[in-house]
Amino acid sequence: MSGFQDTARRVVGIEAQALSLLADSLDDSFDQAVDTLLNATGRVIISGMGKSGHIARKIAATLASTGTPAHFVHPAEASHGDLGMMAQGDVALVLSNSGETPELADMVAYTRRFAIPLIGVASRAESTLLKQSDVALLLPAAPEACGSGIVPTTSTTMTLALGDALAIALMEHRQFTPEHFREFHPGGKLGARLSKVQDLMHTGNELPLVQLDTPMGDALIEISQKGFGVTGVVGADGGLVGIITDGDLRRNMDGLLALSAKDVMTRDPATIRPGALAEEAVAFMNTNSPRITCLMVVDSDTGGDPIGLLHIHDCLRVGLG
Image (cartoon, rainbow, N blue to C red; front, side):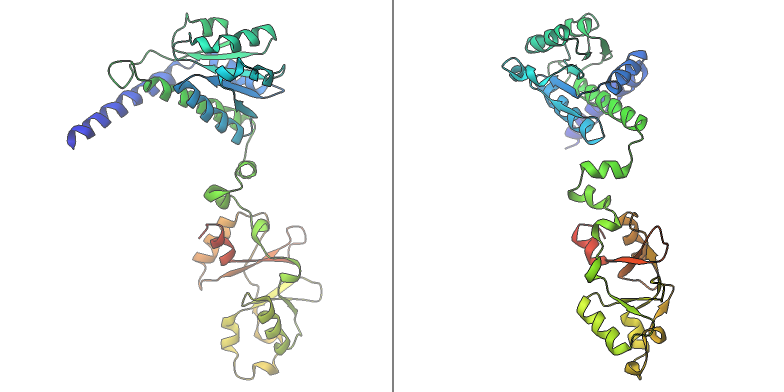
């Protein structure tokens, strides 16, 4: 098995060295590429053939998810009608290790004919692609990890990293935030991590609330009907002043029904804002002592009016916790 591990370490080492070469080779052409993409009033059209096509698809997905409208166009399909997907205002980002991929010829010619900015990525400075490009991004000379030079490995790794560098440069310039990112990733674990409290909280008639002078018999009905095991307690001005939990009920079992909400409640309960990340709420509930399973959500503007309730089960349901 050690022989396989040696191969793996050699491959990773070769590609790591190539990435270092790529970082050192970046120059003003990278800045020009970013400026060209920033100035686009349309979309970024990304294309490549074979392994470069797979990398192009990933770069397109990364750009699209970080605030830069982009999509992949297959060069062969482009020659059979999909060239119409490009228009003035777009920018073309075309990948080819050799810079001589014949299937890209029609796409390159189309960008020249209709004055669509072309950013080319290749490993040969004198290649047709880079000579035709408005911005030429030259990959540094580095051996493919296969040893024979016939399997695209190092070259595709460098191209992928270059695409990531472009995407992050654009993202940082646009001050793209986690909140923006969630808009493009509403599903899955990532979407759950970026969910806000307001996306998961219970509101309106689902929200358990009683007044300070509410008899505990009525408060118990509210707790039972709403099904969260708690109820918030509000003052005359509608602001949240307390919460009644199962712990409060146990501590006041003797003569409970003779009491009112203000006699049983825990004052100044833990709260959270609707714009906070749900992951933050989970962390707070898990680390609070004693541990709690609910948080009252208070209005960010009024500072104290209860507008929702977040239960730990709501967070677990979307994959948090």
